[in-house]
Length: 148
Image 1 (cartoon, helix red, strand yellow):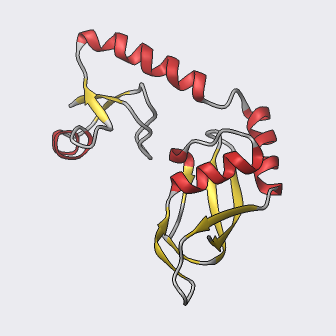
Image 2 (tube, rainbow, N blue to C red):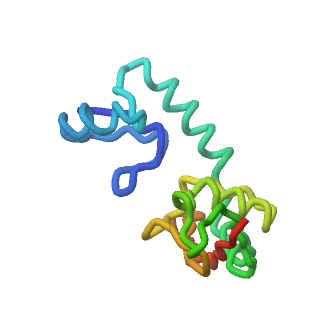
């Protein structure tokens, strides 16, 4: 089955890529979640618009990604959340929360889809998250979760 990806899929490709996947994976997983659309001949215009939006949003080059990496790793990022008495959070810290905190702290726009959290953050204190800035550049950010 041929599909056009609308979002980043790890191990498969990025937005605007035309990929060939097994029928069940495309029909049951990718298309219902809105991660991909079916490929058609008229879909080339869609591919072009997705790629144009991707390049305008993406980090310009490796040097720019390295600059952003230095800013992110040097910054002390605090995320204020609601928590109970034992320091246990009501819910978890989401990548959207982390992205907004990084944007406020560093001034660089960080997309929530580039943030990788290994285990859900459900407690106060220091945590580490990974931010993929470029295909070859990834930053490890020290995150401090504090009670709001």
